Image (cartoon, rainbow, N blue to C red; front, side):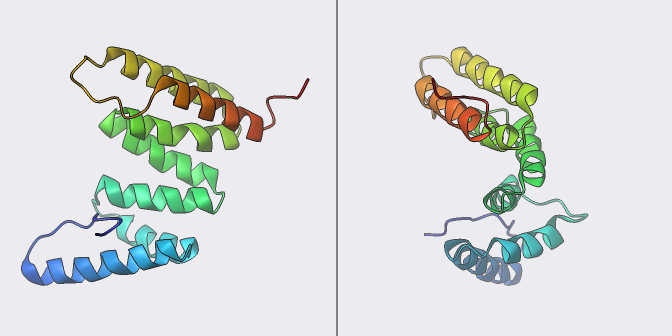
Amino acid sequence: MNLFNFLPKKNKAVSNNNRQSVNEINTLYSAKKYDEIISRLSALTDGEEVSLKTKRVLALSYFYKEDYENSVAIFMEIAQKKNDLESWFNCLNPLLLSKKMQEAKDVFITILKIHKGLNANQPRELAVPFVRYYYACGLNEAGYLTKH
């Protein structure tokens, strides 16, 4: 099973090339070769419409390279388009680690509002205590919490 299936399939020939590209990206991701992923996916995203999954892989690669500015910009774009819990949650830590505290607080509140607005039949991908815990961890990593 592929970790990422993010390239659109247009025809059989393109599909085989896409499958090969997906496998290469999966291999690079497993090997933590984020610079190469960024190089390849940045070339794809320049001037072309690519899937949100492709953008997510690019954002994750920037995040693991500790390039929070680029990471958060892509995660925010995804969250604004999808407007779901997981996408907004992905914005939280890079915002905190790039010390954008007000934006992080706004994202945290957005997550809580989306969670509260879900009806009983909708899945809750993230529990509020989980989100609060990671928000606190991000605040701590960013140096905003002190030990007493």
